[in-house]
Image (cartoon, rainbow, N blue to C red; front, side):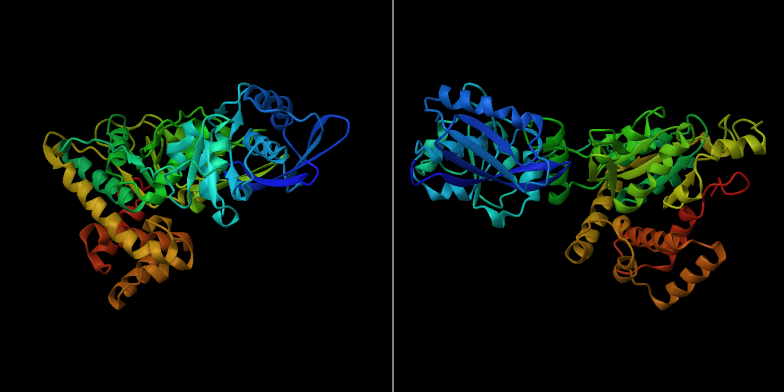
Length: 511
């Protein structure tokens, strides 16, 4: 004890979903017995002093009745959670020479909460910490046994698991083997191979096919019972297979919500009610919690009865729809959460629901229609890439056609594979709909003939700069669905149909 008074172990903490390393510096000296923790610890960390002391004693070790000071660096960042119990306890045992003298422990990352009996309890958020930290600062990670599956999916560095404080002795002696790499299990939406639909619904199915293939935000309108919700659920089944990058993100979000017992993930389908608050939708409150836009990441955020949502809620969606992330700022700090969802909205065109349909006569006034549609203002609609109004026509509704959903899904998967090969290496993105700024023109070139048609259509339709990018991206996705190497003129023509059937009570609700 006389020559070994100070040591430093490595832990970590989370700010929202973003981790940061914490250097756990421990000093023991003779003096009045006390246990003090500095470095902006949260109340749960301050309480760990007695918890760690009892855990050490109940594990068969001796607790040193000396002056113990634990400093958590960086001192200016608040540390939350109970991730630091294990590195603090390990450092105390190391300084009191109750662990074999092994310098490699000081190069390990320790994460774990201690029970009073010395057991190491599982924690939420282990995967986001391990995936977000630079492994250059440590050689291996030590995590609770129950967290072994999520911790070992990365394969970036060795993962050791312990279930009790006494296991640190075996770890220091080199008697433990790292966990084998665990694979993420993907749970896919099961669709029937055959599906019967009215002919008037076929263009709408094409719209959600394009939206699903390229992650293009989509708005569907139509009368009650036209199949808008059904189409949104079809889109969920159409989504491409989960890429490894997406799987880790999905598992990380799940890890923040619950203690994982498996590594199974699927694409989320979030459908909040129209009475939802803006905080629940995009995140916030005093605890800076994540909202539906983050929980729907890499899946679908479906807002049914869109006109019934509060306008403030829809305006709050503008940033995450555009950027794929949401920044929440409150007095206690600022946190950025991922929000890479596919937005699908469904709405009636008017209060009665039958404007511009041939099922029933619409008796709504132009003023009431305008007021009903006022929830969607220009900036929000400018983020929508695909519009479609589902119109029922009496001469077509009586006839049904059989659709091979498997062939549609296969074409979407093929298009997704093409996009990943083209985009991922240069941009780190997986879908055309995620491209931003100069990436759009660089990754989606057009032939001379297509350029002429492209700019003429833009001039005629008076598209915004954002809509110009949407035009190019949707056309590229249609070409990918066809397996075409280049964007063809017919791809631009089809993209223009869906892009230009936007919202207006006068003449643009029907394509």
